[in-house]
Amino acid sequence: MRSARLPVKDRFILPDGMIYLDGNSLGPVPRSVPAAVSRVVEGEWGQHLIKGWNVDAWMAQPMRVGNMLAPLVGAAQNSVTVGDTLSIKVFQALAASLKLRPDRKVILSDSGNFPSDLYMAEGLIDLLRQEYELRIVAPEEVEGAMADDVAVAMITQVDYRTGRMHDMDDVTRAAHGAGTVMLWDLAHSAGAVPVDLAGAGCEFAVGCTYKYLNGGPGAPAFIYVRPDLVASTVPSLSGWLGHDAPFAFEASYRPAADIERFRVGTPPVIQMTALEAALDVWRDIDMADVRAASLHLSEVFIAEVEAKCPELRLVSPREGSNRGSQVSFAFEHGYAAMQALIARDVIGDFRAPDIMRFGFTPLYLDEVDVRRAVDILSEVLRSRLWDEPAYKKTNRVT
Ligand SMILES: *Cc1c(COP(=O)(O)O)cnc(C)c1O
Image 1: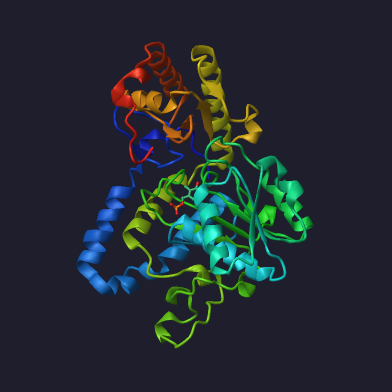
Image 2 (image 1 turned 90 degrees about the vertical axis):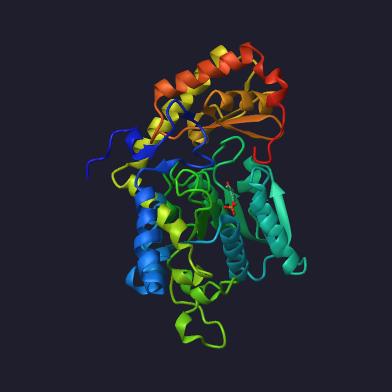
């Protein structure tokens, strides 16, 4: 199939005049989504009610959607399933990793990881009566910290604050060299950069679908398990839909033979329908094209900001190959400046303490958008708009 030329803006619903630099946090609505959702609500749920589980194949949706997602992260068919939220999938993958290395008592992660991943590890360790240790090192120390007491390395490939990106092959190789299980979190990778899970050979990967995959707020997460390992993994969240025969209603848990053992409970059919329709956007998109375009847009952005907004300091890696698809700048009045920018329809976000974060999603952004965004940003700074009291009030979600 010929790959589409980017951007493919007409595949998305975007408000007129808005420059959306926050697809790394919540992607916009793909045009295919509203009709799909209303078909399921009105045509399937509305008309078929409970019969929908069979006649509309709702029960098969987690695998079907997992198989649509698999090629986007370099995974084989039937090695990915979809459900729950990313925090839950992190917990599942971590617990299963520890079961694979019962003699080791350390979970390794890095200080660039997203707090929820670390919190889930803390909760799991507490459940395991503190016999385990969460060892957090600086991102650049991860490879060197692989050791024979480390059961699992739980690493998020792209840092949510700075966009710094780990080399998946190198880190996985270091983990395996120490006999450590490798668990990748692809929250800021899936749909943003080319990922080759099968090639990397990692044991587990998890990720969310509402960021670069545009599945919508609260869209379910995904989990990948290396196919040769699935049968020896122990799912700790032993819900009925991960059972080998859910409708036999047996008295005790017996995991499904395949990746479905990482399902937990009833799938969110409507939300998953939105995701399924959203994934259709990728049908003829080559991830290498996305990567090339995102690097180009990011480089234009960095050069323009550095030329026009000297108050801002780049905190993302300057070298594109070390960066995901976002660029962050530190600025003392970053929160208020971002609010002023948002009020002018340039949407980025803010991460404490002082980071202005901008995501580059070449499916619906081009160079004209990026240059215009910087012009508006430089106007916000030149006019000291961040000093207006209205922009200093902190919202619940930043
Ligand atoms: C976005 C993100 C999450 C969010 O988890 P949810 O359970 O989906 O809210 C977790 N981990 C990382 C690394 C993230 O970037």
